[in-house]
Image (cartoon, rainbow, N blue to C red):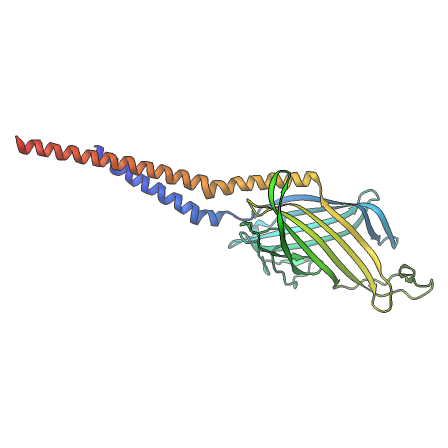
Length: 319
């Protein structure tokens, strides 16, 4: 009987050890990644901001501008390790009840690496011909100190976010990345503006303009999950005449994540870190440990049973 129990324990132990290895090296990489059913609202706020009020063609200064970003996962569009997220960002001067701008984008990306894909109707402001590259809203799960190419919707291309050191955010260890987008002309036609806005005499013809855009952005990435837990974006948008001198700053926004949004992102990242820990450490180590104990117990019972059988055989031969 002991031998039977011992063999059974050895078989169970081998199964548990194998299961632990499979969870760690096969299941974990398959399961750890961006969710497909996400719903998330984050807010950034800029104090003492400048923007162009298009309704009155007036440049407002000293304003408080809030950027509310809503992200929803398109579960039906997700497939083969690809997640699809729809994002809408509304910039508003809530004090004046004025909407400065609405930005829309649809991202398709690898659930683990975050790499953007040009599929699944991915688009920026409804334009599906944009060639999206780098990472977008979701960063690689495996956080590292390597520079990352981050896609920018306004310039419609990716720019490097350079590793800039380690920093604790609310006690959490993060990797800090800095992205600097130099002044870049943005595609798109804009309406002609009054000449007086560019310091030209009253009565001069309306001025045809191009929009130029630059950004200094900082991202703080949780080293456990690769998730952004804080960010800051200083955006400057300038209109320049297509012909002749002059310029007009129509947006100067130093946007920072609000404390409530930072707290929510931290909570979500903590939850993700717990799940990653279960899949990469707790479950594999528990299964493997229990399996080794079972194998050891099984061997002990089997060997003990074998010795007893051997002793009985020796006694019978002597008698």
